[in-house]
Image 1 (tube, rainbow, N blue to C red):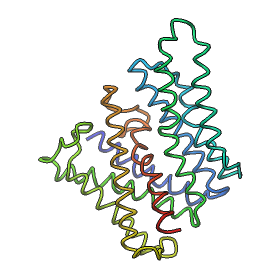
Image 2: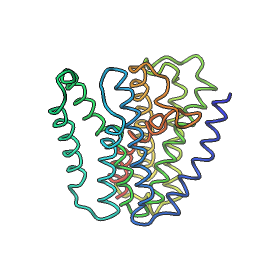
Image 3: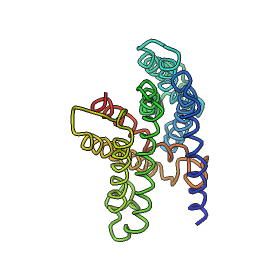
Image 4: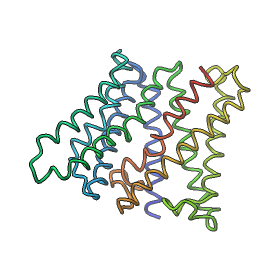
Length: 284
């Protein structure tokens, strides 16, 4: 019950804060949002590095935070300050080069850990940072504030509905996914329905932003919601698999009621590139 109350408190306090950040600070293509996303990426990478250390991949927290922030920081420079189109690629190459070259200067007893450090370091550049880059890229869309909020509402509504449906209707249909045995079929269905409904609402209430001649608008909205909702659910399951592999319950304890930062952005991270791609495909 305590965790439930903490989760509600974070939801009702955190959601308005994010809305204010998006709506009230749109300057420089949402610089404030872009900085926030970069910070979350760094913190999420540090938590991911802690999981890797439990499997003897010796990666320092500060190094992990820098590697995790490289992609979003480069996207921030590109989107908010007009940086070159190669900024993100250059950041990835720079990070990968550091991961590889830094092992050259290891002492002899640490060289046997080089393969683990390199593989772990490269994965830290990718997850969650390169997935979150696509939220920053959304700032280039026309009416970006509305688009970003709709994306966040689709993911959050799906997550909340999945949790509620699982609590009420999921007692006899859990354990389908081994990586997260507490998830239920009812929860998945409830999450998908909520994501589609939010997306359909966006098409109906914001026809100037979610208009398309490529497909019937309601069909395009349904596909946008379904694809985003599916990616969000898979993002949550993927992080559950990471935690089970590391034999931990939460990625951290920074956010009361939810665990760590990675626990809170896992769905958002995987859903961001899917939403971005589907929105460009159907509505631009």
